[in-house]
Length: 152
Image 1 (cartoon, rainbow, N blue to C red):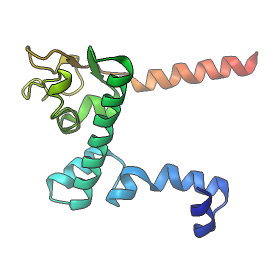
Image 2 (image 1 turned 180 degrees about the horizontal axis):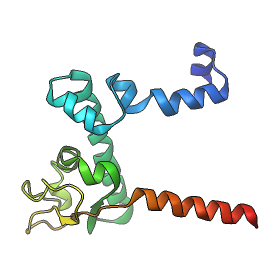
Image 3 (image 1 turned 120 degrees about the horizontal axis):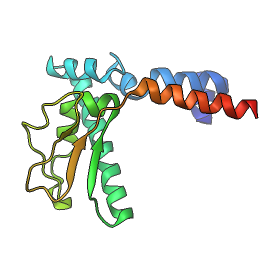
Image 4 (image 1 turned 180 degrees about the vertical axis):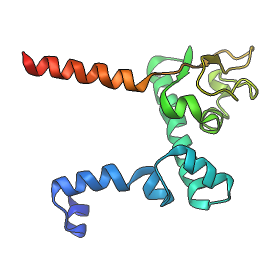
């Protein structure tokens, strides 16, 4: 970070703002950080969008593998929130070639958005599910807890 701050002549807050708004998926694609737009750009043949999705999916796969090692296996994988609920391509691609862990997806079941659904095949040793989240209520509850703590 300090190297980048020096090279880009940024103060700490400027660096934090830059990292939070211009990097990640947006930085790779140059299009958006909205995965719906990135998936559409990939579908339209955009190579940078394709790279961003490959990197994103690889990272998910890597974390699943790391947690599987740390927990001595996997019983269930739960997809939730924005990407987990709505990006069937991310769900599918992230879990490909994970049969060695017991993960086997069902392509038809994976075509669901926004409703609770088992996504794994019947013969999958690891259950894969999608559970919708009301993100707004989660944020509201977290905010309420923070405000309560401030009043103490």
